[in-house]
Length: 351
Image 1 (cartoon, rainbow, N blue to C red):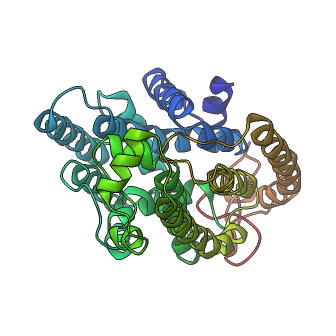
Image 2: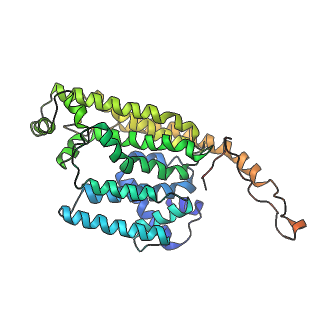
Image 3: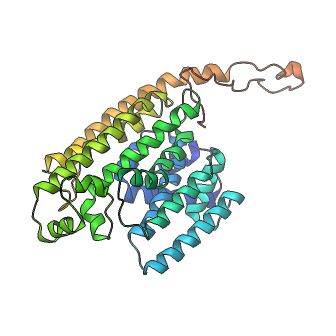
């Protein structure tokens, strides 16, 4: 299946194909929901999403699963950032993950600032262990989450000007990460970090010491449950702000994003159903439910692709003045893909 994706994307160079496969494995191993949703994209767009998420997973692993002390992690991040910047400039790298990312960034004209901001957020994780206010956390999440949505947007494509969809894509990245923060509050605490804003916790009499005590003893506390409920509502508001952006995406990309939107939102449902036990165990959407949502998304994706085929065939058949045999191009069909009109239900930014 991965070879078919690479063929569909026109990626033929053996080194580049191998690089994309490394990213695909990273995404499959670390991002079950993202990987599942990516399977609903047209095959030609999947490698680019694997490259973007694979790189993010790799950098995140350096920070969250260090094999050395803090200084060693900082050094590894600095090396990765240096390789990334060189790769983005040159389009090549000896590192397979960076190579695939650089190729994707060039192919889809992704703004390099998004990668700079992401690496800055990863570095801040080494030194910042809590956030006094939600506004402070939002500033961090710009680099750690919002820019991921902005990176992926050119791959997904839009039906109008990409700038109109960009704020919604950024907000959906924030919603996904806030979901992780609610779900992983116990695991993050073990790493020495509290991502839930201190002012949200303090409103219910919760601080790091109380979280640590509950984590260590396995007991529950009504104050912690109330704070997690508030954090859940913060997250749901982010989903509501992001939701209008789904209609702005290329129709063939919507089933992928809608599936991720649904499954990630249902993680919050699972946290609530557990009695906000996320401090003690990792909750998840049941496998049967995941399969049902993915299957519905698959039917939607197939229908969207069938609808898109006549439009694309018609565009490919529009003669462009100055081409064809009359213009001295004997043996050619004289046909080119027509430009797509902003504001119609046809994609921009998609390959």
